[in-house]
Length: 233
Ligand SMILES: Nc1ncnc2c1ncn2[C@@H]1O[C@H](COP(=O)(O)OP(=O)(O)OP(=O)(O)O)[C@@H](O)[C@H]1O
Image (cartoon, rainbow, N blue to C red; front, side, top):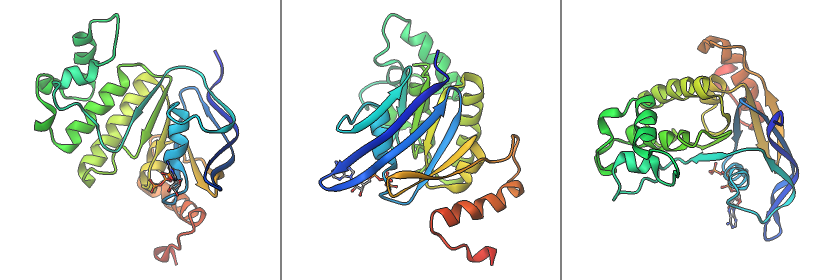
């Protein structure tokens, strides 16, 4: 089995004459948690769509070795299916209910298995979306701002949950986020996408991490993103 779950070389994706991804190289090792930061419109979602196989209008070498699951900012649950059916949808050759129940227990939603999606809170719906991604036991989990629409407290709880799930299953993860603290807290490696390429890479300190350990690194990432940090002055 290859050491890398993602290996991308000289990836180009252009819309019209604009190269949104411009000779981009990226590696994600098996079981590694990588966060991707970048300004709005820098091409983060485009990159995720390419890795998910949803966009093939590219040139360059894109290798994804293994199964892939995606969770988006909006949970995208089917309203006419109960929660457990949303989780097990598309699974074949297994007892869907048993698999869904196991995944729902992991995201602490067992009591909502029979519920309809419309009755869930935003955080609960997002946990269903995570359960749905996990039941496929992906080698690569692509997360596109999965916590962006949640309130701050729910977001913190989700960070813990995602870290626990990652420790338990060890998929490779590529997390797109606007939240620098989230990236520094969760990832083994934090990448900055700018002008179509990975322009910077930062390695947060070993886990468990305290907020104070991350302050200096946060300033450096802000500088990579072209944001002046007046608090630091
Ligand atoms: N189908 C498309 N047709 C034309 N342009 C597109 C298409 N998809 C994306 N783009 C453009 O490519 C650029 C990158 O978009 P993308 O959604 O990848 O950015 P992003 O970094 O994810 O942004 P955000 O952080 O705001 O979500 C944007 O300028 C966008 O307008």
